[in-house]
Image (tube, rainbow, N blue to C red; front, side, top):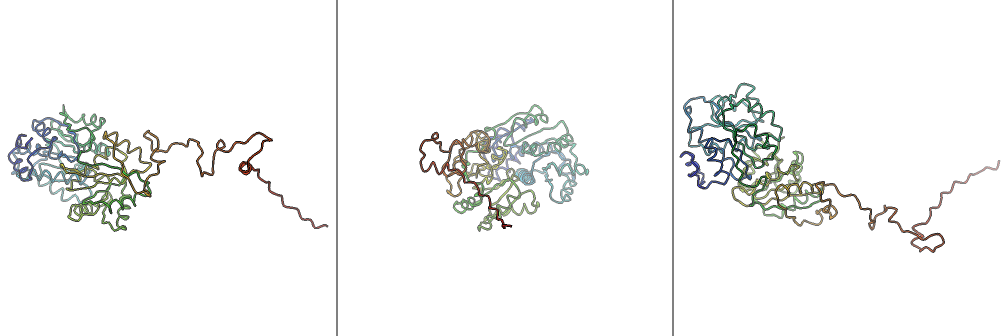
Length: 448
């Protein structure tokens, strides 16, 4: 469906034409008319399919059509967008600015990790739209810098992550400060049933839009996995990067310390790399992202802080150096490539103790992931690849059968001999030969 068929204002259509957009994605085609009609909405679609535009465009339309205060120096906050990370806050604000550049609406970003004074000054000048992370927004509310009494539209982007990350107490306090007579929109790439039930408390008779199976990755991403001995993952990563034609690569680690270790290893191997995670300052994170977006990008090693909200063009490869403990996060990670219809490659390194996580991911995405051949010296031993069929990644107990070359054999595996009087072979005699008792030392007497 074309954008000019969705009922958007001319100023928004002008912005889409300036960006070269003509045809709406499925989530945009279904969500935008529903939001324009004033319904609450719960939208679920694959990452990279245009969810931000699906809520930003109709929100801009609604505010601009009813805007009577744009010429005033100060104006109330009329739309509030809550997001889980700083990077996503910056990205969503940029989208509002891009689509609303021919309107007179103002927007600003509020997030922690930086000096709050510029954010306070922007609020004092007056803004129509605030995009915020819950923690910093609540801080400014407590200081009296934020008034949410005039909010008309409340949006939760990546709603499941915010509720899973422990933001629920903060979200509850923020939602209680917003008028009940409002429009509420929730968008995410994954929406588990428990999150749906919880989110249903904040939505009023919502419409549901789901344009693809829940928790499914886009088809343009080619997925594969290496079964690798965990201790050899650094060497396999170096080998993979040195023998693959990559342009812009994102490597996911589970911990901040692990991300730093990977960067050090790659630098020693002569591969440019940089890390981004929660221990980095916001300025450092911004500089690293700018380098990653440049024409000569380093390999970006990140924690799951970059699994959502990182919208960088032409990410050709995503590598799961460690599989996530929550299978839904896998969908978000590999969604950093294959965006906007482009193709991408997502590969994972699976150690023996991670086989259970791999099976959970395959069940969630309803597809088997292709196993790649790896260097023999890095490969997971066959014993580890044939472990239990259940979800546990622990190895099976030994069956008790004798194995050649093993010193400690069970009693049942030792040679059995005939009854007394039967002749024994030389090998049997040597096996069953009794030990000679130790001699006691002879007492030496002096003869006195």
